[in-house]
Image (cartoon, rainbow, N blue to C red):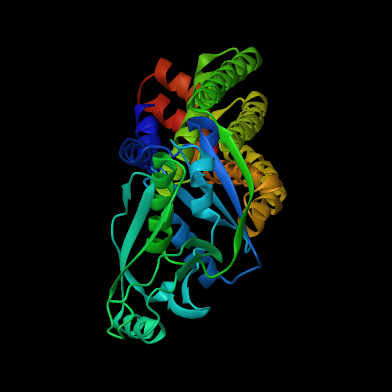
Length: 436
C-alpha cells in the first residue's frame, strides 16, 4: 500500500504541481501581486487620440505621457494603450485634475518673432529647473546650434520686439527681445517666462511647462474624455469585500461537498486542489504583472467553481465504477472511468474558454475601457481553467485513483492464501490467481 502512495508522489504530474506551487509562492513573495485601481484606490484618466495610429506612434504617445507623469513627480504611474486610439493613465496619490494639463496637451512648442517661427520644440536639447520669484515664473532651456542659428537670423535687428512663445498654440510667454539677442550672434541659452495671479499658480504653471518641454511633443493631438477616481478607503473596502466573498465561497463549497460525500478523505483533496489553483493563478498574475482587480477576482471565483464541478464529475465517475466492481481484478476500470470523466472535463473547459475568448479579445484588441474592463474576468477565468485542466485536476484524478485502489477489498484468493499458508495452498491459490 505504501508503495502505491510512493509511486503517487513520484508521478510527474504531482511533482510538477509541487514545483509550480513553490514557484508561485516565490513569485508572489518576490514580485507581489499588482492590484487594480478598484482595490488600491487612485484615478484613471482616459485620453483619446485625434485619430487612430499605428503601433509605433502609439508607443511614442504612451512613452511621452509616462515620461511626463514621472517628471511631474507622480508616483505609481501606469500608462497603457487601449485599442489604437485611446490611452489609459492610472495614477495614485494625486488628484487627476492636477495632472490633466500634463497628459491632455500635445506639447507643441513654438516661438515666433513678428509671426515668423524662430524656434520649435525639436530645437530644445535641455530644460533646466524652473524658478519662481513672487508671481513670476521662468523655465530656462538650451537649444541646439542649428536652432540657435535659426533664432539669431530671425531675431537679427529686431531688438525690442516681442518673442511670442506658444505651447499647443496657446501664448504662454511674450518677453521683449533684448538688443543682445538681436545682434545676429547665435546663443543656445533661452528661457520662457510668465506671470500668474498667485505664487502657487506660478509654481504650478512653471512645473507644467517644464515637464511638457522636457518630455517633448506628442505626435498627435489628444484630449481627455473621462476621469474617474476611487479613494484609497473605498479601494480598501472593495479589497476586504473580495476577501470575505472568497472565504464565504470556500466555506459554502466545502459544506456542499461534505454533504455530498460525507468523508474528509474526499472533501479535503477537492479543497486543496481548489486552493492550489488559486495559488497558481496568483503566481501567474505576479510573474506577468497582471492586475488583480474586481473583474479578475470574479474570474478566479468562476475558475474555482468550474474546478469543483470537474472534481465532482471525476469523483462521481470513479465512485460509480468502484461500487459496481468489487474485485481488484476489475480495478483497472477506474482508469477508464477517469478517462471518461476527463472527456467531459475537457469538453466543458473547451466550451468555457471558447465563450471567454471573445470577451478577452474585446479587452486586448479594442481597449480596456467600457465592456473591455471585463477582459480581466475573461483572462483570469481562462488561465484558471487551463491550469486546472492540465495541472491540478490530473493530480486530483491520480489521487482519487490511488485512494480507491487502497480501499478496494482484498481478492478472495489473497484472503485464502493468508489463512492457509503452505506449499500446496500456495500452488492452488497461485493457479487461482493466474486464472483471475
